[in-house]
Each structure stands twice: as C-alpha cells, then as structure tokens.
Amino acid sequence: MANVKLIGGRASPFVNRVQIALNIKSINYEFLQEKFGSKSELLLKSNPVHKKVPVLIHNDKPICESLIIVEYIDEEWNSGPSILPSNLYDRAIERFWGAYIDEKWFPLLRELRAAKGEEEKLAAVNQTVEGLVLLEEVFAKTSKGKDFFGGDHIGYLDIALGSFLGWLKATEKLADVKLIDETKIPGLVRWVERFCSAAEVKDVIPKTEELLEIAKKFLLKPQAQPPN
Image (cartoon, rainbow, N blue to C red; front, side, top):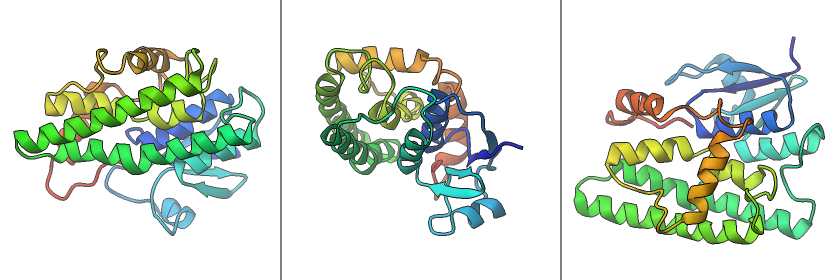
C-alpha cells in the first residue's frame, strides 16, 4: 500500500500541479480519482474546511491547497531537482507571483469563458493577455536566459502557471480567441512548448479535446462549477 496518495480529478489544473511536483521528485503515489460534481467521504474528511481537491495524504496525514502541497513535496523529498530556489529572496518573489497567478490572472481566464457579447469578450481577452505580457517579463527575469522559470529545471512558477495551459488552450477554442500569441509573448510561447513536452508534464495535463468535452458537458451549463 502506497504511503503517498493524491485525491483529485484529472481535469483540475490544481491537481495537475501536485502530479507534476511528484513526478519531478520521482515519487510513486496512489491516485484517488474524484467523480466530477461529487465529493467523496474521504475528501470531506481530509479537507473539511474547503472541501476541494487536491489533497495529498502522506503517511495518513492530509495536506491541502495545491501550492502548499508543492512546497511540502519539495521540502519532504530530495530525490529530484529543487522546485523552489534556495535563496530566501528568490523564494519570496516566486511565492508572490504564484499568488498573482492564482488570485489575479486565472480568474480572468474564467471571466473570459463566461463573457457574453463581443465587447465583454474583448475586454476579458485584453486583460488576460495583459497578464501574460506581465508574466513574460517575470519569465525573462527569473529564468535568466534558461529554459524555465526555475532555470535549467521546471520550478515553482513553471508549475503554478503551466498547470493552467490545458485550460488556456481550451479557452482559446471555446471563445475563438488567440491568447498564446508569439507577437506579444515570444518567450512564453517557446516556454509553453518546452514545458508541455517535458517528461514530468506530458502525461499529466489533459489534451485540449478532452477538456473541451468537459467544458461542453459541465462548464457551459448554468450554475456549473469549474474543476477545482
């Protein structure tokens, strides 16, 4: 019986973060798939406050919230490259931008999917792309000319932003817009290709077609809640 278990759903970018971090550290784990639209007794018991995936269970102890779990994995196991930088200032900067991605940028992507009318959609597109342009600048500073935000290896910000790439591409299809635009974010466009083809990532993030089916079935219905 594995002493590492992950409660989650394949389509959740927040769950994908944990999967990528575990892959980076080469940790075997048992994946406990939650059925979309319902919450298991184990999930409610393991995360009684938020009642959301992901939950990592290590030695029967639950850890909740995706980026907190990523940090836990990085500190608990030294079997792979470090996910967060060792320098305290650099760690603080990456946490800041990780929070920006979750609290400021990703909600814009949700607003774009829900936009009604061309004017509302155009405003949402502009705001989402502006956020990506800002993250392009962050990439240039933190990567220091290397392949990833984390330098030579996938790091904290790669995981934080990269986990949303599946839904970013699906949103482009759903809304018939272009967000990953080489004329505006050339560095991130090349990073997207490297990140998605990395061994730790390529079998984790669902294909665009799979996410489109989920969106059509659940997210486009009134009052439906997106994967969490």
